[in-house]
Length: 298
Image (tube, rainbow, N blue to C red; front, top):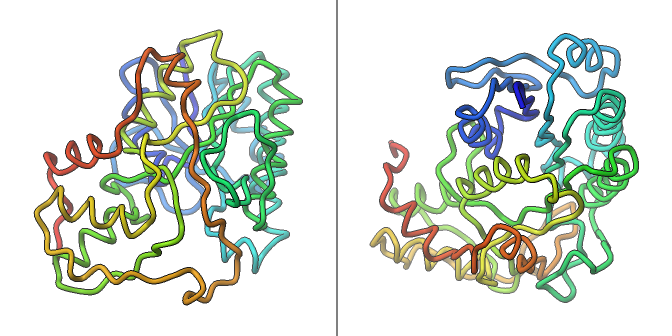
């Protein structure tokens, strides 16, 4: 693999993907509006303009394409369903069609939001049942990718935590910064996810691209099924911060446009077996994060 293209390089995960792949091949990252601040080879790519996308792909001729770009704000997707569909569904169709025509390795980053959240610990064999428009667009995109590129990889990723290197603040950034400033943080006690360190997600993507047997659908999340509030408590403990600023609330107390699932945790047994791991420990990930330099809080 001589060249890889990463869409959404200015996003939270995208910046880590660029670093994980940089040592293995020539990497080009794309962005929609603002170029990443980090050094690297980047170009603007608007998924809403098919001809522009195809022109850039024809110029770059990547041998692997990691599609991490998406309109991922749940409430924005509810307000702007047509625009969200154009980016998340039709944009993905263009990329998948090009990859199929040029024999390009294709890895699509999907989400735990393709599930309703009624049960939790979802496996790859469980049927998708999204309840928000964002989830619907991601499910449609998954179907498109697997239809156009049968040997593609669809990776459903759980809630990621880590230091954000872009303007997109992660959940861990927000909790850490507010607690450090002595500001309260409201966190759900009845919404469950399976959080995973973003560094590990990027490392897994790099490994999967090198494994021809890794085609198909995979789930990737941490080993713990934690509520948002539990995650906040664990983060505070890892950093030795006073947890009294964490305010427990229930989902019914929070007003939002997009419906949110109560338990979208993922079962990552299959991918752990593939990669020769026993688990991705959420607590270990938080401890690893605590050993790195946090963002400057002003």
